Image 1 (cartoon, rainbow, N blue to C red):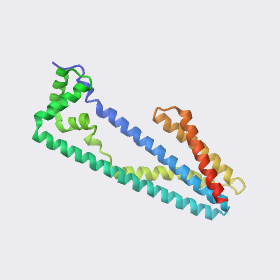
Image 2 (cartoon, rainbow, N blue to C red):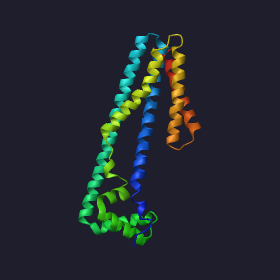
Image 3 (tube, helix red, strand yellow):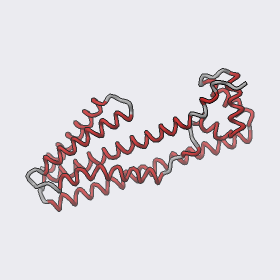
Image 4 (cartoon, rainbow, N blue to C red):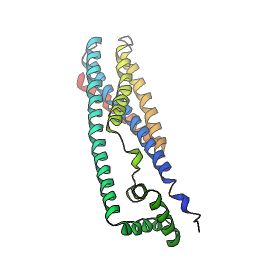
Length: 233
């Protein structure tokens, strides 16, 4: 007897892969948002103290490099730790499958039953999955890990570095390219528009209401620029 519900389990990696891609995209948007806010606060604060273009450019570049390198290093350490934990969990699961296969089969059947399958169907699905690839089945159902999609810390570091850099370039260019008379207005306007966009997009990715997210983003960025400009002045 082939259970009609059995195909549900093989579909999980697809859903997990989609979730992983959405998390990466959300992280990229938030990284760009950090680049916008932190660099805007820095260059606007310096603009409160001086109108010298070279000084503004130097401060902006220093903030861009410091922020992007910090983001990349932090992401590398974080993802490396996560990857090490996942590999350790997979190694432990592999050892348990080798030492007590019957108990692991019972555990997998119980996990599938907890997900809504009947006891008979869960047992048959567990046997079929174990026969095909026991470690992969336990990794996905029990641990929530896809062995084929472990995060790469170098990819995460470069993604954070690029996201922050892209975001930081906007206020940096906005403060050094326009004429001195409109420099501050152009920067504030461009930053607030960009924060509106990243707030809206991050809310859409998270299926959250867009208006509160946009409002928080714009008000937070405006407050940061006001405070640093006041300090610079």
